Length: 117
Image (cartoon, rainbow, N blue to C red; front, side):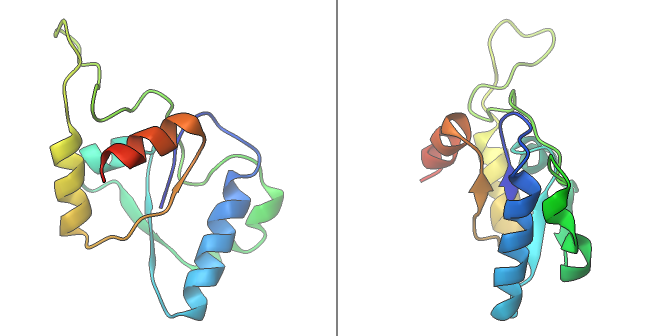
């Protein structure tokens, strides 16, 4: 799962709910750090367990950190006049980790997630 967009008070509560629900089906949860940026740069994932989410609903923000500037289809790169498309790198990381999806955010996050379909 990843959290995209600006920081919001309910993101940790959603992470907690996803992890608790997944545990009922004996599924592991992988958190992607800093939204889609974590998919662009392999190695920025972590397993999120039931122990990690105890009491999390009372803490604002997101333990996964977020980014509202990480559109992998148009990612700004220093020294390049135009944004670069990193979507294939994200997709490869996604496939390599054998992930299913849970993207939490608002309009921008949903729009980017929809582009991967």
